[in-house]
Each structure stands twice: as structure tokens, then as C-alpha cells.
Amino acid sequence: MEQNQSGAPFDDIRALFESFSDIDENCVTQVKRRDASLTKPPGSLGRLEDIAEWLSGWQRNYPPKVDRPMTVIFAGNHGVCAQGVSAFPAEVTAQMVANFQSGGAAVNQICETFGAGLKVFELALEIPTNDITKDAAMEEDACAATIAYGMEAVADSPDLLCIGEMGIGNTTIAAAICYGLYGGNASDWVGPGTGVDDAGLKRKVDAVEKAVTLHKDHLKDPLELLRRLGGREIAAMVGAIIATRIQGIPMLIDGYIASSAAAIVQAVNPQGLDHCLAAHCSAEPAHKALLEKLGKKPLLDLGLRLGEGSGAALAIGIIQASANLHNGMATFEQAGVSDKD
Picture 1 (cartoon, rainbow, N blue to C red):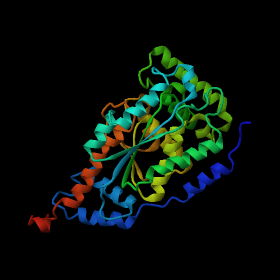
Picture 2 (picture 1 turned 180 degrees about the horizontal axis):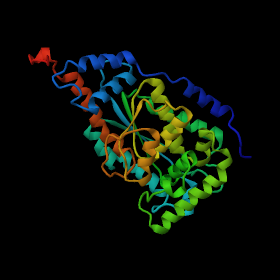
Picture 3 (picture 1 turned 120 degrees about the horizontal axis):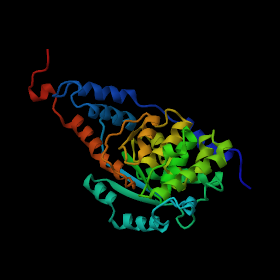
């Protein structure tokens, strides 16, 4: 029988949220001190200076560095695809996972460009989650276990982690999460995803409306909302966000679906995303509105709508540049350049 209230499995997850520590202000101070002495006008590198502070402060180590960046992709399938919400069949998820593993996807090329590792987590692709228009996506214990599994993303101790996903139908899931969290109209949060036609877009809106209406009495608890409206890849990304915060690993969040996982984290703990940056604003129409809800200004806006961590992996280069600028630039004294009076 379906559970109506959160219980022990989610209590364990909530305890992790309560263990979050803050940024290391001593590291931030060291970055600011050196930055003031570098051969440039103060503030002339704009956000790159802020990123160096963010990077060092959340790594809780000085100087900031990006020696072991990692992109992780979580892949899951969704019962809501039975509602005709996607332009592609569900088997494409597994086919794309094989493409990642063989090195043939876009994200493989981007990671290679910046010397980043890539790991793919398959999440029971042969067993889609329940159709959220008819039932809760997952049972509570399964959702909590998937969150815990997502925490394995930090097992190799990266110094910067990017999260992305693969899952046919998951823009519908992300829209349902956002509609459940923020309200408005279902159509505010639904977009074309992988390219559905007008009829497909209407089916997506109808599915999101139906799902949130079905579960509306149980959505005040963000974790309960996740298990009812979410997917395994969303739950695993929540786990990755938790783990990076606990382990002192800054994170780059990819597009609309990854940002919906971030929204769950922020709903549980309003400061839970302080160690995260939004890598980009995707072409999915609702992503901009979601980033505004999260209070995140994206690093890139390139019209990407691919998913698979591609935007987050591209932003690795910006973070690397920030660290290298901070560490490698000469000071006024070293360069024999006159500082301002």
C-alpha cells in the first residue's frame, strides 16, 4: 500500500541536510588578499574573481584548484512516457548510455577538451518509475536509497563535480516538480524538450496538470514531492548535491532537469545550493524562470538543449580559468609594475 507520510528513510536523508557546513571564510579571505595584489585593476576580471573565492571557499582549501574535474550522468526511465509526452521512445535512454560509454556523445568530447572524467550511473533502466499521472513515481524507501546511491558520485574525490542526466520523458518530470513546488500554471513549466510537436506539448501539459492534481495533498514536504513526481535520476542528483556539500566539493549544475533536482535541495534547505553554480541557461523555456527561483545567474547562455551534462561540462573551462588566473598571475611586486597610489 502506498505510504502517505514521510518516515524513517527520509528522516535519514533530512539528517544529512542538517549536517551541511558553511563556506570557509578564511580561504575566501586569502583569495581576496592575493587578488588585491595581482597585476590588474580591482574587479577587472568580474565574475572570474568571485568564482575563485567560491571555489576555494567551498573546497575549504587554498589556493583554489581544478585538477580533478568530473562529470556524472544519471540515467533513468519514466512511466509517464506512456502518456505520449516525448518525441523519442524510452529505449533511447539505454542506447544513449551505451553511446556515453563508448565515447561517442557530445559530453564525451567536451570532457576530453577540459581533461575531465566522465561517469555514467544507470538507474534500473529496464524498470521505469511509475506513471506519475496514476501513482507515486517511487516508494519512499526506494527514493531514499536512490538518493544515497547518487552520493557515490563523489567516490573518486573530484575537486569539481558537474551533474547531468539522461532520461526520455524527464522534461515532463522536471516540469511536474517545478509546478508542484512553485505553482502558477502547468503550461508555465512545460516546454518542447527533445522536440515534441504541438499535440505532444499539449499531452505534456495535461500530464503535468493531472499528476500534480493527483498528488496535491502531499506536496508540502519536498522529499515527498520528489518521490511522487520525480524520477530516479532526479533523486540521484539530489544525492550528489548532498554529497558534494558534505565533502567540500564545488558543483556545476547542468540544465532544466538537473536544476529541478537542485530545486528539491533548496526547498529542504534554503542554503543547500550555496556550493553550486548554474553552468548555463538552456533553451528549455522554463529553465530561466527556474534559475530565477533558485537565485542562480548562469555562467553560459548558448541555447543548449541537449542535457547529458553538456552545459555543465563546458563551464569547467571557466572555473579552470578562474583558478589559473588567480594562481598564475604575477603580483605588482613580482612583475615590477607600479600599483595605483
